[in-house]
Length: 319
Image (cartoon, rainbow, N blue to C red; front, side):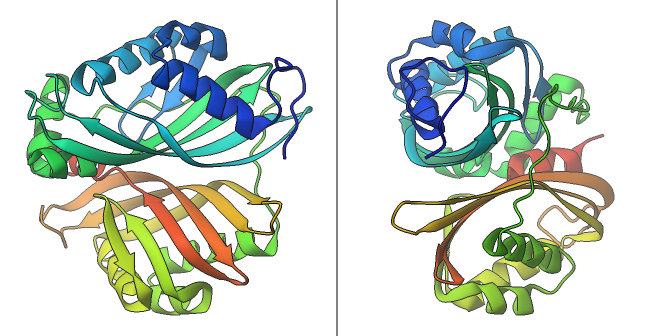
């Protein structure tokens, strides 16, 4: 349990803090609590946008609830790390059952029932979230409402004259510092991803993943076993060349019963090969991903891979 320094005394741990404030803002619809629990300015980076104002956080929250008024934020896990000197870092995995009942960024209401997963990495200090990295599986929403990813990407690009216009995200202020866990599990996980993006998915998956691995991948799709994981990664990596892979944050937490969980935020900069449904080559793209993994002894038995396929399509289709 990660105890907190200089936070309200009601919060017993980082896990408790994240769960409680999420419940208040989203489940109880206390939107104005954002002003209480976020700094201003607060940088929020997603795969397609960067905002800096607390008003943007409030506006975005209200817009989501217009389109999906019954949205739940069910916490699957909070993997955390931190210290009084450097602040606290949480990686919060959420599953949201919701109904597309209102008009908004996803078009006219369809009435479709949706399950979408999000991972929000938050740096917290002095009782507030001061910086956030958020990846939502937008492809899962598109799939549920029956809109092709390409159509949704083009619709969103229309708002910026057909150009993908994500600004550079500023770094969090001091005392934030990037943390890369040196534990065996975390390092093995990071090294496996590096090998995968270098085209060595067969060896990497075979060395680290349990033969009964169950992974949830973009579009709310499920993969089971070695063969399906190798196929997923081989197909994914074949879409890119000149790959530069970087781990931006890597944390491990061990539960009281000994279960090991690792959260990794990573980024790929690459050039498209055209080896996908879009067929567009020689476009520079960035993939901002967050992955969670759960171990049984030395092997990964469950994994959650968050990549925003709509943001990727927007980059490919950008003018």
